[in-house]
Image 1 (cartoon, rainbow, N blue to C red):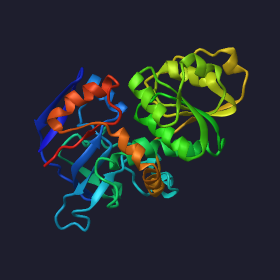
Image 2 (cartoon, rainbow, N blue to C red; image 1 turned 90 degrees about the horizontal axis):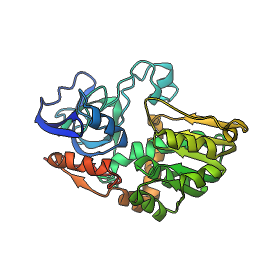
Image 3 (tube, rainbow, N blue to C red; image 1 turned 60 degrees about the vertical axis):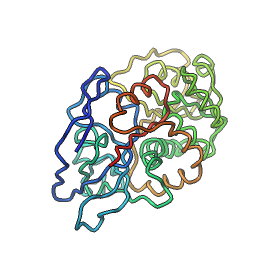
Length: 322
């Protein structure tokens, strides 16, 4: 089969690779769509030993298996199903396995991928291939985080820092869950302009820092955004940290020090949330359709990633084809 290899410094090469060899408890999934994600910019820059791609939809290609031919999305965490976290429903926090599809094992920027059976999420017929990956990070990750935050704040003004796929997904989830008005900060005009069409008001970082928000979603992983989040959160408000980075450098100012607030870190979502995530997609399908603003085959992946890295694409999708 053909698979993309990330060699660092923005270089992606499509190479011949061995067909997936699923072991006991796994199946082969023929990839129909794999959405690009901001976290994949790290392997794009650094190179990666495995084929990336972790927002995957496809068809089970395992003749003789009970699920052969089934349309599925792929749940990223490879969970054991037996530990305390898994049996309590927190499959994304499995205590036994720390493998993630597309990170510690081959992912979906390829024609096919081996997937544990317990990570298969059946797709209903009304969810097309190109939208199915949004159920994972864009909706799943953001919705789980907002659900956690809702234990502390149920409504009120919200601020989203970063209008990439996670930030835009957060705007749609916040809007659906009753938060508002919603403000957004993003230096890229294309992204902030799109956020405005979703009902969020673009504001400057300085204006955001001077505000006081019940819920602040930090979706960039950048120190500047984290600084703004700490300044902008209101008294007894919540900062929901979804952005990832290797280190923090924050200046503790008086406006940060002299208030009570909650800092919440959220990772992915428990597998039991999938039905609720489907409901969110169906409720705002027209807007999620607009997020998928480009598609390409494997041979166009490097060009697609370059445009995505420049902020010229919102949520492009790889469609490997036959």
